[in-house]
Length: 242
Image (cartoon, rainbow, N blue to C red; front, side, top):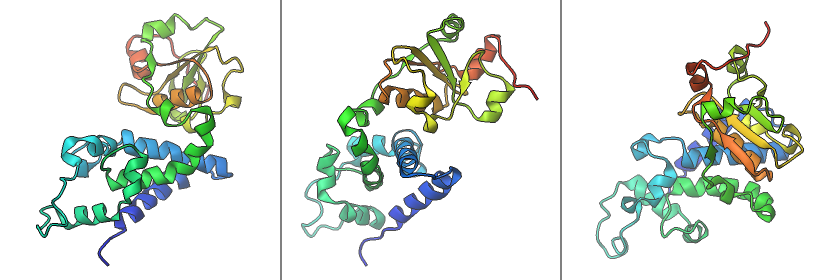
C-alpha cells in the first residue's frame, strides 16, 4: 500500500474523542455545528507542532508549502520524506480547485471535506466561510463598562461555567459559543452584542461573535481583554451565589 490514511484516522479520532464525545449529540444539527466549529479551530487557530507552531491554513498558503513543479514524474528522486509524498499522492486534484489553492495541505483537505455538509446548509444565507473571514469589531474594557446600563446592549460570557460563577461582568449572560442560536440571543437583530472570554489569548469569544454574525446580527463586538482585563481594571464583577 503506497498511500497511508493514518493522518485521516488520527484527525477523526481527535475530532471524536477530544471534542464530539464531550458534548451531548442529541440531533444532527448539533453534530454539524460541533464539527464545523472544530474544523475552523483546527485549521485556523490551533498551533501544530508539525508546522512549527503555525496553523494548517497558514502552512498551506505559505510559499514554502507549495510543491515544486516538475520534480516528481521525471525520474528525479523526491527529496521530501515519504509521509509527505504519500500525502501528496492522497490529495485529490479537484480539492485544490475547490478551496482556491494551487496546492493544499492534505490535513486542510480532510477538514474541509468534513465540514462540507455543514457549510452547505449555510450557503443560501452566505453565513459560511465568509463570516469566518470577517475581522471582528472590538471594544475596550472602559467602552464595555460604559454600556452596562444600556438596555440595547447585551453582554455574553463565553468562559467556562465555573469561571463565570467565580466572577463575571454585571448583567452578562453565560453561554457556550457552540450553543449559540437565535433563541439564545435577543430578538432584535439590531441590538448591540458583546462577547468576552478569559483574556487576549482566548478565542471562545471570537467563535461566539461569529456565530451571532452568521445568524444575522450586525452590531457584534468582542472584548479581547476578557474577564482578566476587566478585573485588572478593577471593574465591578458579580459572583454567583453558593
